[in-house]
Amino acid sequence: GAVVSQHPSWVICKSGTSVKIECRSLDFQATTMFWYRQFPKQSLMLMATSNEGSKATYEQGVEKDKFLINHASLTLSTLTVTSAHPEDSSFYICSGRGANEKLFFGSGTQLSVL
Amino acid sequence: LAKTTQPISMDSYEGQEVNITCSHNNIATNDYITWYQQFPSQGPRFIIQGYKTKVTNEVASLFIPADRKSSTLSLPRVSLSDTAVYYCLGLGNEKLTFGTGTRLTIIP
Image 1 (cartoon, each protein chain N blue to C red):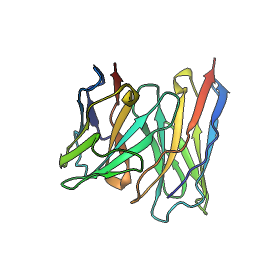
Image 2 (tube, one colour):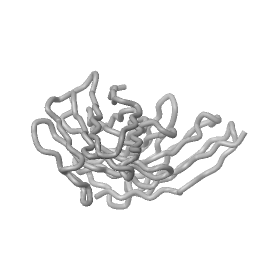
Image 3 (tube, rainbow over the protein chains, first blue to last red):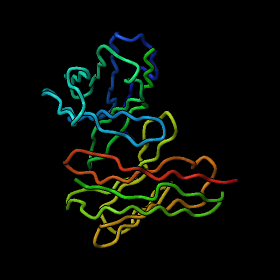
Image 4 (cartoon, rainbow over the protein chains, first blue to last red):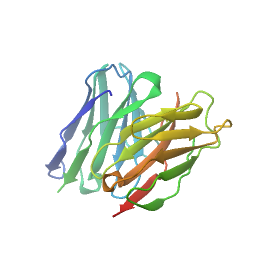
């Protein structure tokens, strides 16, 4: 199946710093990528949808200035958590849409903000 | 928006067949019904996808009735490594939201 590579797998940062998470589709072109966050024992919550070359569409309650999404190419999308705070600590997952509307997910990034 | 409803949790013994049913009453005509498996601290993994009737692959079967308002994921002869959360989604052109998923626990 198609592969989505997500880095880093985990990151620990100090409060107030910014963290960038990369998501690459390795063997397919993802015109649309999705970013999710997941708290322990909860389902995935959609944060935003990004289409290559255009601005991301954010879900209600997700601050676009805090969670910056860039989808500059068909194989790369990035999520930057700006001025991170402890409440931003979560598991972040990206996915790319492939053929037959299948979604392929990255392995996730565990963010811990101290 | 295709909202899905699944049992929150299920338990099964090793070697049994497990069937997880998902309700998706307002699934769109063009949506594919897709199931994912997620282990702790990992991204969801694609299991199987179908549009109608029955689909089978090397790990599971998917049964979809003619009205497409529900689907059933069938896992034959489960093992301890099948303990995970299973999600069903209707994949189409609209934005994709996850339901609660079903937390399946396999008992030795």
